[in-house]
Structure formats: C-alpha cells, structure tokens
Image (cartoon, helix red, strand yellow):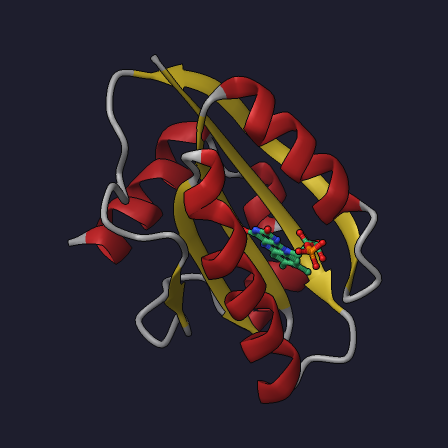
Length: 128
Ligand SMILES: Cc1cc2nc3c(=O)[nH]c(=O)nc-3n(C[C@H](O)[C@H](O)[C@H](O)COP(=O)(O)O)c2cc1C
C-alpha cells in the first residue's frame, strides 16, 4: 500500500522564484525517498498531494509544516491507497487555472470542508 497525504496551506511570499525553489527542492529530494505527488498552487492557496512510503511521507510533512514559505498548514487527508495518482511525477506543478474553487470559495473555507473524495477527484483531474 501507498500512503497518500493531502494538505492545504496559505502561501507566504508567493512569487515565481519562491515557487521554482520549492519545486526544485521537491524534484531533487522526492525521488530519493520514493515520493511522488502534485502541488496545486495559486496566490491564495497551496493544495498538495504527497504519496509514497508512510515513514517518508510523515517525515516530509513534518518538514513542510515547519516551512516559513506558507502559513496555516492544515492536514486534510492521510490514507492508504492501492496505487499512485502521480507515478511519473516527483512533483507535478499545477497552476490551477482550471480549478473549480474561486478565491472567494477558498477564503470561505470550501477546501477545508471538502470531502476526501472531492479532494481526490480534483487531483485526478490534474493527473488526467
Ligand atoms: C508548499 C510546499 C511544498 C513543498 N513540497 C516539498 C516536497 O514535495 N518535497 C521536498 O523535499 N520539500 C518540499 N518542500 C520544502 C520543504 O519544506 C523543505 O524546505 C525541504 O524539504 C528541505 O530540503 P533540503 O534540506 O534538501 O533543502 C515544500 C515546501 C512548501 C512550502
């Protein structure tokens, strides 16, 4: 089984250099730990799926949660799944242009209230 974790957070100091730095680190580190996933990002939100061995997931999430480049890191889901959604991606980056939650929805807490199935289906569309 694969551990799959989804969290949301609020970008702090969001710009293209920050984002490139995060993605470069993810793409350098994740393959060494059997980790894959996707980062949906917009000015007002990071929504990330991480998948891989449980121990690697938990230790990465601890590091991410302490990262000053975002705030209000909120764990939304941690579950065991049969297969990966992003087997070929150390970290896919999705700038969420096609995303169904508006900034207003996000600020009113739509993502925190979404079901795990709804969150997974957002990532499934990103993977498609
Ligand atoms: C939104 C966000 C997503 C991140 N995703 C990853 C990731 O997938 N993998 C990773 O190694 N670091 C990720 N980081 C960076 C970690 O917080 C941390 O800076 C990094 O793992 C430290 O690695 P280093 O010691 O190689 O610099 C992320 C940071 C943020 C803010």
